[in-house]
Image (cartoon, rainbow, N blue to C red; front, side, top):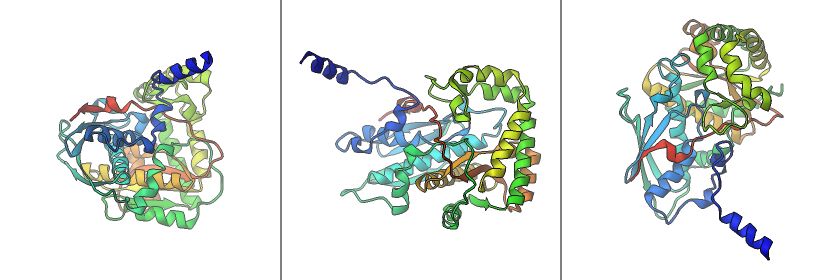
Length: 362
């Protein structure tokens, strides 16, 4: 009897927040149906914060109102060297908006997103108006299927199998940008993809040769068993626990561009498909690209595929235009990723508690 009593007491103890696991354990069955709007909106944001972002900076914050959520770009989390124009930062915010849309529709909210394209860093980039329908009506089928992929979506930097991606999947992906400022271009041409891989390798060498770039990158690298709720653990790059503790120092101190270039070039060449999200350089387009990106990634996750990013040539102006020319695209490349299948499971990236992302409540 005593042992049972001890176990019961332990169950009553509050769980310690683990940034590598707790955020992904969000349980749809625990949605506070009878709770306040503040509790319900906060629960929806637990899905929004699982969006991808460059270096896993998580550059978003939210303010709750009676029937809406204001979405802000958190410029304190910017990457001045890799992303001086905040292009990738705003794409990350767009991805979070897509997750919020998807979760809201799943839990029976009518969702409307109004954007603020002024570029004022103090103003929200979007207002998400939420009206709960009674009785609850199911979300649109396309969004409903994506909802279950939100907590399973992870960047996979391991090698991919040579197995081709089915044409039906590629066709489905290409339609995801319709009606938006963004578009998708998918290449399965080995010759073109080899040229892109060579471009990726050259861009990697250039970036790694810059001490400022390496310093910024090193500041967002984390040990595998990190307690910090942001950044990239070494495991995401296949680095062991011991080596991951030295990774930030090593990256800041040593130019490993030659090694990284060969590694990334091989991954690109072996990938069965490369995907580029395109659009013009503007705040509306960057937000739209982020939303379409998350739809692409959730669709891939739902269909059992993996992905990882190779944005290096897009972060270098000359290489960006060369990428556009190689693939024959009419609009500017905004994001580059490889897609395919992998036998290796991706490592989890840490996440901040949702409460840390909310700047004001009802």
